[in-house]
Image 1 (cartoon, rainbow, N blue to C red):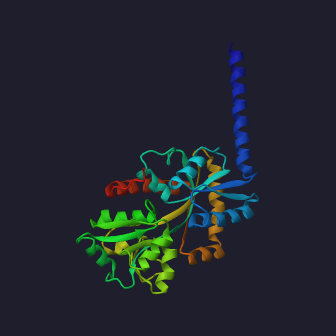
Image 2: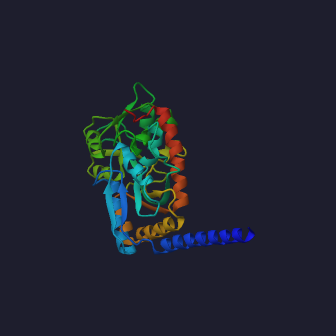
Image 3: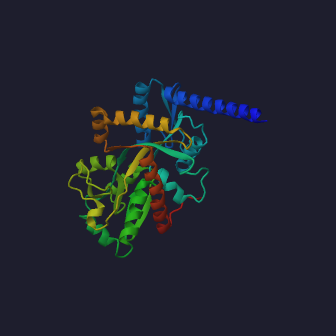
Length: 326
């Protein structure tokens, strides 16, 4: 009996050792076939452009083709569910922006768990939004916005859409400053900016990339940026926090996620390779000119950012009554 138990124990140990060796070998040779980047937005948007840029550079660096597949719909939940239920082998990855952390607070039920079904791989860039007013507006500074939000029916502001980072940037101001801001949702950042320029709304909260050309053309007046620090392309424009809203920081981040059980060795390898790309002066200069801030963070830090943002955006969404349910 003891001999049989010993034989079984040895056999089990051999099987486990073999499985671990195979896993280690797989991680060491990764990637040995094409990688798929799933983007939760249509082609042409900021997240898609970044995914294609990084995918092209990873193709050169890792010797395997990175294919970008767009799976828009349901505010990004269709693509996220697809990746969450894909094999955890590093060959199907999700490229997202911070809308990913907003969705859990605006949908009562998701077909996947955004914290336990997907893991952070690498955060590689971020961009602030800019709060602006039409050039002819009487709003001369962000203090005027805070004052105007405390009188009458408040002020209206255009965002890139319901549940977008720009919407939550406005909602966070409402909550933190106890002011009235009437949200006007648009189907994209471009139409939102058009109505700010024409004076159809009091304010706009739009991406830095869309705002800078309009400021240069003297079509709008920038009042504040939503990031923690001022930005190089608008150095004279203060942050929201400078007006007494301590801790205010609503930047739109961009990153890569993978199915939760993806081995850490693969996640770390992807992190290192993306970091090398973002450190290149030509890539950094190109993206900074487009309004992005380069900041690379690995699996642990990025995972913590996602969890923290889910919690804080959930609180803001509840406070302003935001829901994207039908």
